[in-house]
Image (cartoon, rainbow, N blue to C red):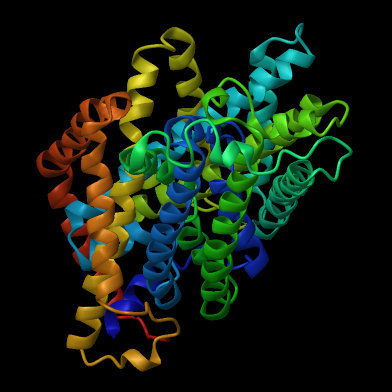
Length: 477
């Protein structure tokens, strides 16, 4: 299929120095952030013990569907533009434009959120150090890691993410010991599972509503698609990363949730404290909060670093297609999009300023609006896989020769689209989440209005120029 060669060549400037273990940890780094270590308490409080576990299982299964669809696309077309490029080529340029800008804004705002979480925890231990000093330090660290060779960044993220994974495993094991009474204290047993209203104290409707925040917690797994553009062996590393990330992320979340609801009564769970710190406290481990704070800070910095990497690569890809300013397409001698990295981080810093000016209104509105991105982009990934497979077959492609194939086609991608759309619509019926609709829809409208008024002709013209140029170059796929 000649179009595949053209897509890959267009984004062939990045150096392929990413290994399979790097890709897996970058995805883990993006998905396991403060949402798990702090935000999981909110899910427990809303859905109850059984409801929280079920919500994370259902969310994990949905993630698996999305990852399988992304795996097929990223294996045959390993490009940094990832689902933006897939949507542009196999759905429409307009959908690709929307997907790209929403996801990039989501990444930039996520950097802000993770920096805020890390800085506020550190200020508890160093109260005389201004928050601005921490932000400058974070900026310097992120910039250094993201402008060096991609292999250096991949290795650093591997160890950053490893700390949080070890923290989750240790906390889960300690929690199991508490539940079974292996720590010398009276065993908690199943009392928190069956008492206080049972497994589903708020009914099954609460499970569906909790699924909204669960899916937001799982966001970041799709970073594998972007990292595929710098993989040194995408045909092998992408399928492996897809399988391991889907399974292990589900295990991390579900296992930790089973332990948490067994230790913490669902009524007392919330977002004001890390439920993981409660595990260490109940077990009688000294300096429990200090240990957990270290893990949360590391987790926040790791997640922010992953989003900086992914967002900058996406912005670079956007510049190649006329979706972003052309000067962002320049690469450094190490074949790294330094300008895209700097611009992404500057927007993240602007988010910090916005938070300082209006933490309770404007900043919260924008953050909520971008939250809708997760289910939109997941639905687009499944939609693009449908478009690619049908186009591939029509062009005479042999499905059996694809390096990775989405199973149960077309049932799984259609199910993924329907489920994600349903979750997006359900936001309207959750009073606390309705602000996502109020602010997200106007953001989407502004992006699409800009596309049709100013960007559409430029992007289509750029696409035509790229295809013409590629036709005069030798192919090799």
